[in-house]
Length: 120
Image (cartoon, rainbow, N blue to C red; front, side, top):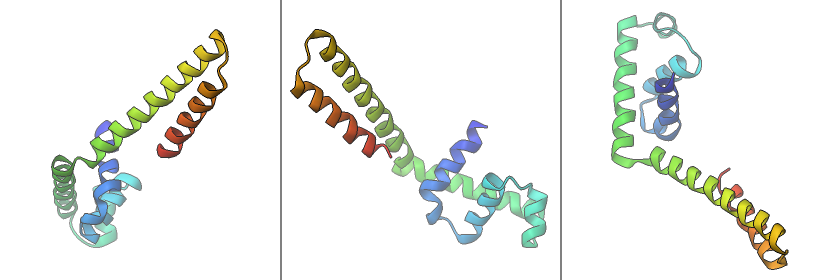
C-alpha cells in the first residue's frame, strides 16, 4: 500500500511531465483502482501493453524524483512547519504559566498562523 501511495504522490508532482497516455494509465490504475485487464479493455490494447506502459511511467516518476527531489523537499518542509507549530505552542504554554507577556503571546500566535498558512 505504501508503494501505491508513493506513486500517487509522485504522479501529483510529476504527472504533467508524462505523456497523456501514461498519465491516463496511471490514473486508471492508482486513482480509479482499475485492473490491468479493465484498463486494456477501455483503451483497446493488451493487458501486457498496459502493464509495460505503467511500469515505464512508474520508473520515469521515480527517476524524476531522484533527480529533482520535489516530493522529499515538500515532505521536509511540511515536517519542519509542524515542528515550528509545536515549538510555538510550547512557548505559548510556558508563557502562560510563567507570567503572561503579551508580546510573546502575540508573536507565537503570529508564528503559528504563518506556519499553518504555509502548510496548506
